[in-house]
Length: 109
Length: 109
Length: 109
Ligand code: NI
Ligand code: NI
Ligand code: NI
Image (cartoon, rainbow over all chains, first blue to last red; front, side, top):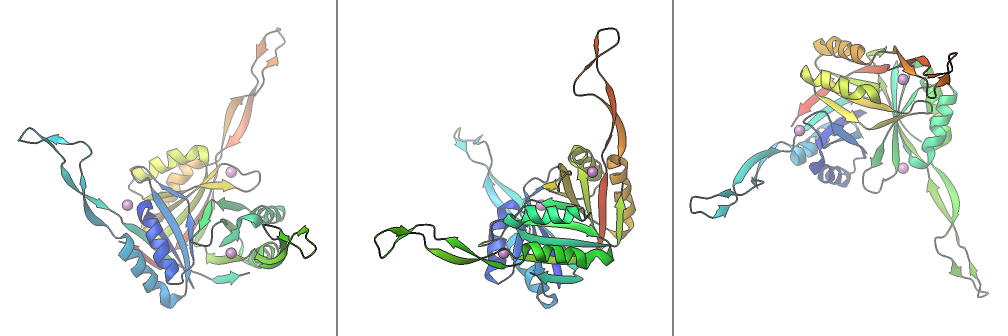
């Protein structure tokens, strides 16, 4: 038995819990906030058999991995034609930090 | 030294913290919510000497184990005599998931 | 890779997260409340390379260790001169409980 502790971004937490639960994994969500510059994290703990660890890691990776997205800039800027245009901006979102820990003993009562 | 991570139902959390504290165990309660269909869980972490792990597990088992209870149905139903009667219903409550983890190093400052 | 789980007093949590973050450690703060008589704790988890564990423990110790401080008594008492004077009182504050756990596998996605 292994314990997977995953720190994911809040915006991915719904999707990753959904994906893990659909595959039959039991997920517990701890309320979390990151350190400075890192607000908005959620910590998940998942108890899993050794031979399913890679499956759990793949699900987390697929849903939460760092990726780029294009957003509109918060404030529009004056275009050369004198019209306000939104300024598309590429930002990086997501990312997960995952620890896999060995479990001495696992009990369900 | 071992670290016991116990995920218990909210309704049992007061009693199990009380029982563990009375026996001298130091319990830390993390705010928790379960995944889908699993709302209302509390995660406890308890640092404990190796030879006391079984005592901690027994306390958690005694307080939190899955058991049946009879509740009244949420809405009363019309009995054959024309009087509203409550409808007793057997439900399963409680249950705990417990991980015991080895601790490399334990410090109190 | 090691996982450091530190239970610190709320009043020290800002300072210790600040000190750890300044040294480049990634800290995740879990919302926490203590058991009875232990309200006001915060649990931090810090993933750290083996050879940096002592540095992390030193930072936690320096910021959070149990220490005495002098506070004014909650209600002033009548001094011998007939003037109300505050009553300085020595109290113990701080303290941290730290578990270091071995990590089987560490991933960043
Ligand atoms: Ni991030
Ligand atoms: Ni349950
Ligand atoms: Ni304390």
